[in-house]
Amino acid sequence: MTKILVVDDEPQILRALRINLRARQYDVEVAADGASALRVAASQQPDLVVLDLGLPDMDGVDVIRGLRGWTTVPIIVLSGRAGSADKVTALDAGADDYITKPFGVDELLARIRAATRRHGAAESSPSTVRIGQYTVDLADRVVRSADSGTQVRLTPTEWHLLEILARNPGKLVSQRQLLHEVWGPRYETETNYLRQYMAQLRRKLEDDAAHPRHLLTEPGMGYRFQTEPMPAVPAGD
Image 1 (spheres, rainbow, N blue to C red):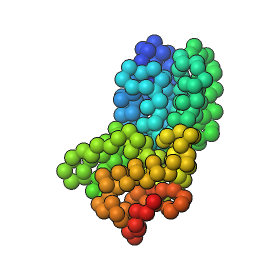
Image 2 (cartoon, helix red, strand yellow):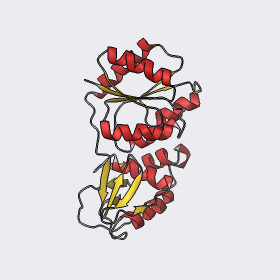
Image 3 (tube, rainbow, N blue to C red):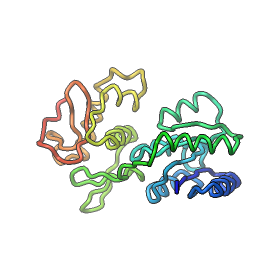
Image 4 (cartoon, rainbow, N blue to C red):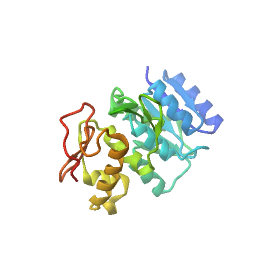
């Protein structure tokens, strides 16, 4: 049975969607705010998320980014924001589809069917990764020492970089892609930004920042998150 997480702060919408989706043999979980949505997604592993952007504790776009830090689950935005800029922002953050309120249940159901067909069976990567002595919880956006439990503070930009790399383990992520996703299309040649922030991440997370084993540089091309340590290489550029 396909499991759907519905995230909305309007009780009547949550109730209506829960009734309609369950009547069509979907397993339904609900959340009324962003923090709850991230917790439920991490624990219940839904096959699809229906998400409102106007949540009481955080913007829905931040929920999308939090989910995209560890899962490729389809996300359908269901929002009263009709502006093209809002749609572009949500889609660029990782949403798969966007429906404007008020909406028809039949249209939503058709979009759900289409999204699940495209995605197939959901294949989510783990919500936590290990970097040396640290455990990175991508859902709760927390880094802790595996030994002492001490937290390591990361800036929003450091988090964004780490999330992109961690959700593509072993894959080379180009400098252009990282710059585009983190800073925007106007910064796609500012490779000095990457050098600075990757150096900061290594100082905070690697056992030996000068010889990283997880946050690796592919000179002139990009960066790679290595889950299994390889022979140490210089940090380079």
